[in-house]
Amino acid sequence: MIELDADVLVLGGGPAGAWAALAAAGAGARVVLADKGYCGTSGPTASGGNNLWYVPPDAGARERAVAERFEQSARLADRRWMSRVVDETYRRVDDLAAFGYPFAIDDDGVERRGSLQGPEYMKRMRRRVHRSGVTILDHHPALRLLADDAGTASGASGIARQKGGEAWTVHAGAVVLATGGCAFLSGAFGTNVDTGDGHLMAAELGADLSGMEFSAAYALSPAHGAHTKGLMMQFATYYTAGGERIDVPDPLGARLQVAELLAAGRKVFARLDRAPAELHQAMRDAQPNYFLPLDKAGIDPFRDRYEVRMVLEGTVRGTGGLRVTGDDCATAVPGLYAAGDVATRELVSGAVSGGGAYNGAWAISSGTWAGRGAALFGKGRRRPRARAAGSAGLGPGRLDAAAVVRAVQAEMLPLDRNLFRTRAGLRASLASLDVLWERITSEGLAGTGRERLRARSAAAMAAHARWCYRAALAREESRGLHRLEDLPALPRFEHRLVTGGLDDPWTAAEPREAAA
Image 1 (cartoon, rainbow, N blue to C red):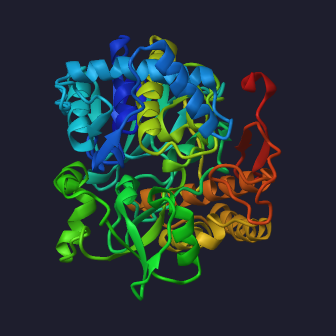
Image 2 (spheres, rainbow, N blue to C red):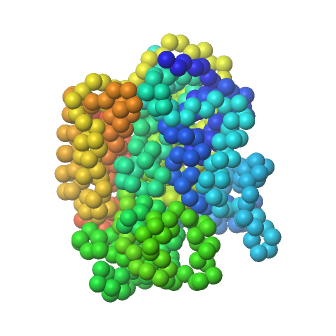
Image 3 (cartoon, rainbow, N blue to C red):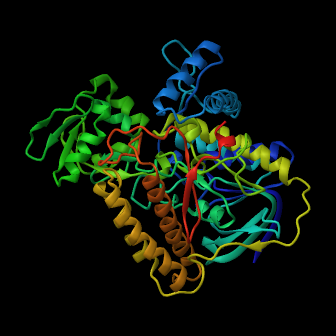
């Protein structure tokens, strides 16, 4: 068995994990980073272009940016946290420039620091993490967190995928979770690693979650593709299968209008014919993965109509995740920190999607804060004997992991279940999901060696779905990403909701001191 010791263990190798590892190493900690895939290439950031919430240090401009975002958030964001994110992101992008990132230059000769190419960004982050002395364990997904007798996070254990599922353990003074959100294996580009594993592991130690009702984030994608970079659609004209033009007042905001047609069983097509000819190549350069499947099919999207579909991105582009309890992104579990999409993004996005610029800035900032906090907590901490927590999906059993995934997807992916929600529909889905969870815990999931990861991820998706829908039932109003068709306009809850528990999930209003 692989066994290592560190001051800080970072789980996840996307931007949040990379920034956390850099910050912890910079604070003098011995750091191990374990990634489910290959640090630098796995996850949604590495799959395409990324914008950032990047505001230069002009007091007036920053105040306006925060005020505007607060109103967009359906008034559930936090102005102080937003200001912190703007400030931290600006300083860390300066670091990225020092790492040699080749920012694009505008017509005035100024670097465009609010836009990043994902592959180049993550390649340089991996290189910097490696040069900082961090031990990187690629293809080493974590299955369980370790905790001492006091309940303090003290490391993790998992399997080495490229070594036949060989076990590994890292004993650590503190743990940073940067494992991403959960897209329920919907096929959205770059999200195959985002199955909610970190949320399950944290909940098994007693962590709670916030914003899970804001999980109905869907995006348009080519029907035979998986790329959901929605900015392309500002240039789209939409058509029915018969070629009739669909009247869309705002092409970029046509998500719900298109979704209604798709939910009714109608096919919808798009054509990017509003894009000026001089932008065609720039669009291809910015998002080559959007055009690749269309090119392979012989489709010119600027000239030809192509079918589109709605793809669930869940809490990857939604806002829900682990509740953070301090400025260092600590969770309710001592020694456990959350960064990036595994953490709630309500603090900067409230009830609306932070996909793109805001999530990108949050990953940088929260990763930096979590890494520093973990280093301060974990450096030199005396570590008593730790035990592995959790069992869902890990013990020998008879349930098939693929069948469990399909059962979860049957409740989470359909538009009439998750996007166009009703209280009766949510209750029906929860009844099915609760039975499924009881079977997972009583009958167990089959899987040995590398297949243990599939079983664990299936259990994590089931837990994630139950949190999403319980929080959705508790918020008896329509706000932001959370739409109740039978309560379309009843603003009642201008506060955040907390969710937790596994066998007996619960919901509650955010603690008053946290809200303050």
